[in-house]
Length: 111
Image (cartoon, rainbow, N blue to C red; front, side):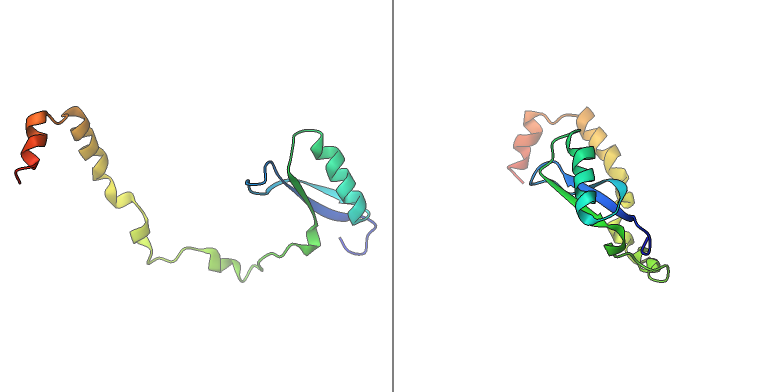
């Protein structure tokens, strides 16, 4: 929104020092300092946070429409999908229904 009195800001927070930042809301303000005060007044009174980011929206880098195609998965990565292991559920169920007995377990030592 350059050229206008108000700027758009995005507000991010993290609940604890070891947690990730999460986008909370957007706001409009005339300058950075007012945006920070507005974010603190609107958000910090609702829940405890360990850190707060207030970022002018125009400073966030995004991909152009032409570069968004690079986000699609490559077709040669099927080996990463686990759908080929569907038979394991049936095998686990079989083992759960037929528990091992002592004789069978002791027989493994002879092999």
